[in-house]
Amino acid sequence: MEPEQALSSGWNEHSLVVRYGETDQMGVVYHANYLVYFEEGRTRLMDALGLPYAELERRGFGLVVRKAGLRFRAPARYAEQLLVRTRIERVGGASVSFEYAISRAADGARLADGTTELACIDLRRPERPVCMLPDELRALLTPASDAAGG
Image (cartoon, rainbow, N blue to C red; front, top):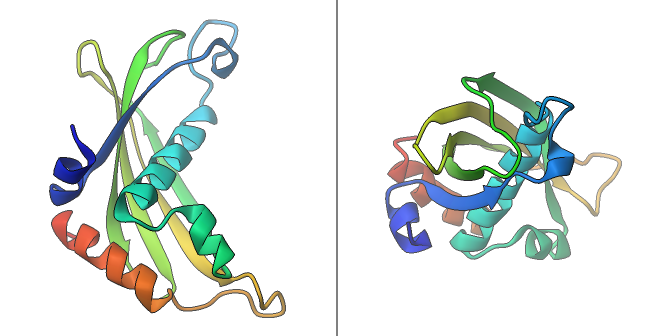
């Protein structure tokens, strides 16, 4: 799926191959690594929208995870290719929520679903870091959220 097609449908998709170090003794992806896969999905979605995280931080803002949810459906194993789908679920005043779906590329089996909610912080104001989403970021996130039905 090309990024432009993915964004028009609300979903951004990328693939990854499970590395040995991401698995436990049984060769199954260790549960905490799904959160790393979610983070990669978020950063790739932000890149596709035209505002990479690094640029957001250069402008003095950050997005920090304040809530995460994860539901396991089937195990992912060493050397399997996975598809990570990410979309914006909701845009709030000072936060944005993302939705994720991870599946096995070989057979399309759904392996995990999840959500994260990120709060916007002003990196220049450590005494009161939580802030409203900057207008430019809101303008990028809102159409993607609308495409997702959020």
